[in-house]
Amino acid sequence: MNKNTIMFVVFSSLTIFIWYFFISPPQQPQKHQENKPQIEETQQRSSSEQQSEPISLKSSDSAVLKESIKIEEEKINVETAKYKAVFSNRGAAILSWSIRERNGEWIDLVLPQAAPVMANFPGANYKIVSKSNEKIVFEYTSHEGWKIVKTYNLSDSYMHNLNIALEKINETALLPQTELGWGPGLGTDMKEMKENTNLTRVIAFTAANPGKIRKLKKEPEPASLFRWSALDNRYFLAAFIPENPSDFDQIIPSRMDKKHPLSITVTAIAPKDSLRKEYSVDLYLGPKSYTYLRSFNLGLEKAVDFGFFGFLGKAALSVLTFLYKITNNYGWAIILLTIMIQILVMPLTLKSFRAAAAMKRIQPMIKEIQEKFKGNPQRLNAEMMNVYKTQKVNPLGGCLPMLFQLPIFWAFFVMLRNAYDLRNAPWILWVKDLSAADQFMQIGTFNLNLLPLIMGIGMFLQQKMTAVTSDPTQRRIMYIMPVVFTFMFWTFPSGLVLYWLTNSVCSMILQYFVLKKESNKVKK
Image (cartoon, rainbow, N blue to C red; front, side, top):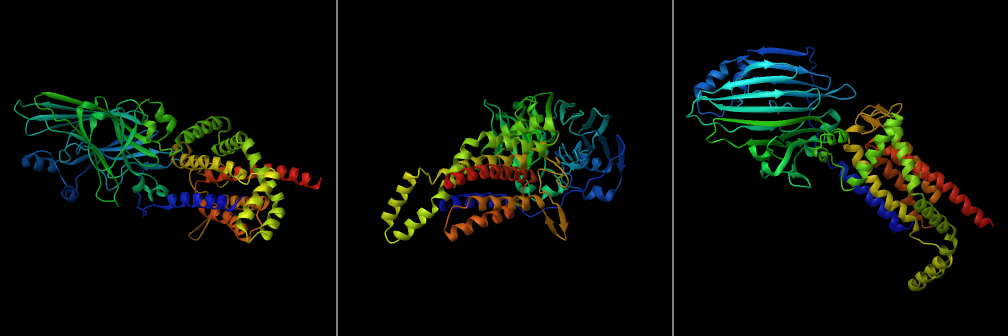
């Protein structure tokens, strides 16, 4: 491996390292409360709380507003095996929506500063017409002469439906404009909260074929151009999927500043002459599991970001899912997939190792030429090229597998970080989550991560086996690389470290046999 190759690997690795650690300050996550009853209605009569809450009724009638404040707030709790939610009659809104993960932890998708979400006319206290596991119906009649009926049709999965019906009671009344909103921000767990603000996005999926994901940052976009819109972060998604996109006016992303997360608001087209208008929207409120989202055939799986080498990440996830069905363990699936990749690239790998072994064999000749012609650069280059030609050695032959591995490495990195399927997936012993650092033990505030240490030792041994340069500076750089990689991988997903460790072990085994064969040639 020549100096340019070494520098290429070092700077490529540092680029990944800098990207990964360019994150924002941590935020405090929300603590979750357990709800024991299946469905429970509670009442709160705290006048001080009611007066402290901002009321923004989209009506000019202050008498209705004052009357609404006097009415006590009622809450409805719904819990299923996959989620639990808290609804409020004030605005017919959602106060909390928690997802149960495979480790039993509850993740509230409504951040404390965001509650309530999905409110329509927040100052209005709706009448609860009916409530059950399958359906909650709210109704509000305004002083101006219009009525709104808001129906949450709930399922035992993550896909639900919201129906909003507006109706004139007084023919002279004007039907108001309604909207759907979530945010600011979307909830996640403690370890992801640190970078949650930077990772929260407002996205929309174009209606025209082929559908594409667009990130909306500042300017409103016409809702009719998109099949659905959503607020998402690394692992969770809150998506609005209208039955008729033309019923809606704009998708509006907004944020207070860069220190605060984004919000999404979808406004409906206000009916002018209609006596009645209905809006039907499917709501996906749940994890970004690529396989599960793809089953809806709506393009929701496009929300899972596989990065620049997305096709490799998707292929890797598909094979991992298949191997998981066989092993019932994503850790062993990663090891098997790594071995499969090694077999696939074995011709290139063997060519690289043979080139490295040949370079090591001709080092005495190269050193002699360098000393003999050190004052004549042109003659030195000519003699070195002559040695490469006569000895049939390609000095760049050792770079091919490295160039091939970098896209795979990056695809694995992004896939392991963004695929919900691997979240909280254990391997063995202390490795409980392949999407996070292994954290073998904690010493004070320091986390001792064992897998990166083992990986670093393996890389050091591999570098020692392949050292082909007599230049002390280059040799030092090569031996520093395992230290750099260990430091870089320290907080990387343990699944990625496991992949790189397995890759190093396979490479060392192949190198051993290649070097042994070359050594026998030299002896003969």
